[in-house]
Image (cartoon, rainbow, N blue to C red; front, side):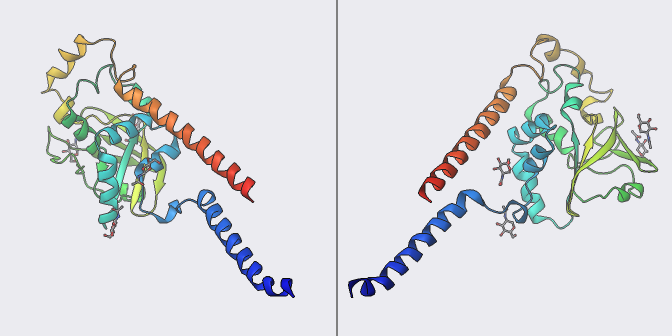
Length: 243
Ligand SMILES: *[C@@H]1O[C@H](CO)[C@@H](O)[C@H](O)[C@H]1NC(C)=O
Ligand SMILES: *[C@@H]1O[C@H](CO)[C@@H](O)[C@H](O)[C@H]1NC(C)=O
Ligand SMILES: *[C@@H]1O[C@H](CO)[C@@H](O)[C@H](O)[C@H]1NC(C)=O
Ligand SMILES: *[C@@H]1O[C@H](CO)[C@@H](O)[C@H](O)[C@H]1NC(C)=O
């Protein structure tokens, strides 16, 4: 008699307990579905794994948030020319450190175009193209595209780069690998001779790849990723024990 009475209660209790187990389990195993969220340019570059300097510059200058917001709010899309770590390493020592914060922002903006350009659209684009650095007049921030077959080059009037792999494309955002940091005329052109003197010579050792603040932030990034992995593992173990 007693067990008969208890059964519906036990059953519903069991269902309740099971339900709470599955919901708590579901959280660590399936985090917020990444693909359906807003596009995250940092995540895209991290996945490609050879853009740590670019990511650092984007983060330190709050340009990552700005780009993500633009992507979410624009219907024209964006195109990013992403210089590899090797491209940054090939810069003259001290190049980045010799720039003011505003110049660093402009340098990165020079690699971003406020519209989506597919590889085939490069064939028909008209030169010079306007980047987010602004004014594309001669001596300012012009960027020219030249194509031959499938090959696409960009040139700045100071240097040129070959457009390599498509890192990402979704018809709203295109990220292309470039093998050089694009140096705008306004900052590195013949009429800005101060770039080759003064500050750079003062600090021959402290270049952009040395043990400076930027690199330290990279190390913190590694540590926190490691910690996240440990934390996730711990959560999984606890969940298994509870089951
Ligand atoms: C974008 O991704 C990066 C790296 O995965 C992460 O640190 C950052 O919080 C993300 N930003 C947003 C807005 O989700
Ligand atoms: C993206 O845009 C939508 C609609 O304009 C807005 O509701 C949402 O908060 C935005 N998300 C981000 C991460 O900016
Ligand atoms: C692109 O640049 C490479 C290397 O400088 C050069 O060999 C090639 O001819 C250029 N191609 C075009 C289409 O400008
Ligand atoms: C870029 O293209 C424009 C228009 O064709 C031309 O006037 C300019 O000289 C070019 N600049 C470079 C650096 O190739």
